[in-house]
Image (cartoon, rainbow, N blue to C red):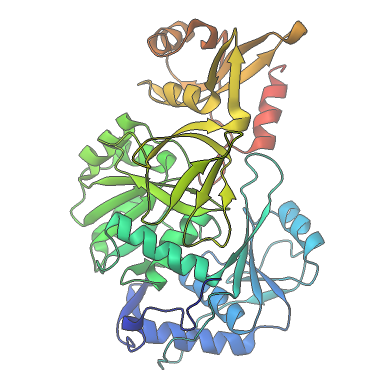
Length: 442
């Protein structure tokens, strides 16, 4: 069992004036944060669970910590859509919604979240590491969202490991994220990393390239941009080098070496990827330009059982957890990702993964986005197809795949669409993807 009654690093216990967040053009201190947490905790309604839909990261963090102070558990849905919320409410009927804006179709009680106008400050609250902090739900990209319960100490230890591995622990830089705090990647990098280090939270979520550029260039501190391959692709196409960018992080989907190299050259900062899941949190990283393999954070170890299942053992986890991905572990403990076990494709006695096929497709210059799929025929025969967003013709795409793929995995059919159905963090939405394929006759 993880233990640390205070929960907050000692250097912040007297940090009333140390910055915690940049919000509305102002730096808010850690003392202000804890004063606001106490004020909000007194106002929360008496329920066991709260669905935290705050888009403002500072208000999201206030709600999370205030709920913990009241013994409540935050529920983090993969999206704020009414149907998804109703699914969650079936399992947690006592929950209420908390956000800064009223929902258009409230499906349960709603609480309006606001920061206190009081200028007062306070020291941090003491949370036990064993306390349940939140229940996060998987994105639904592989099926119905699954509930993942996490303790407060899991995030504290994970943050220490990640920041040590990435060299960000005591940098005093501003974390700017394009990913919502309800998603594990956004939650870790933009909420818990600042909470447990000297990093400073940017409360907003800039989306368009010009908005991101303005936020970073006007920031009072050097900024680290935490984004996704989808967002980085749009930035490299429109934005020139920035002067206030200290580093770039990427996660949630495969990032090609070509896009990583172009991102570094265009934005003028080093890029690192982090690897993990809603179940495990992040536990490995790599500098995509120059590193093929993933390096586990200090203390994290991967091993494989007799059935080939990969297991993660790490100080931030209470138990050994199996990975959904199939990986190849190297002798030095680093690893490469082969794809999800469920994504493995076998044709004519040869094997590959959909993740590898999609990676090769994404690396073709002129292909904006693309996905492979398996076409099944009678008698168990399978062939590959692809859906792409591109101005190239079918023959050009096949020719550019040929040097990297065995003939049996080249797409027999290629469909062109305006967009691949992805959610706000760039992951393919399973139901919409399947509906798209059905519309094509598969």
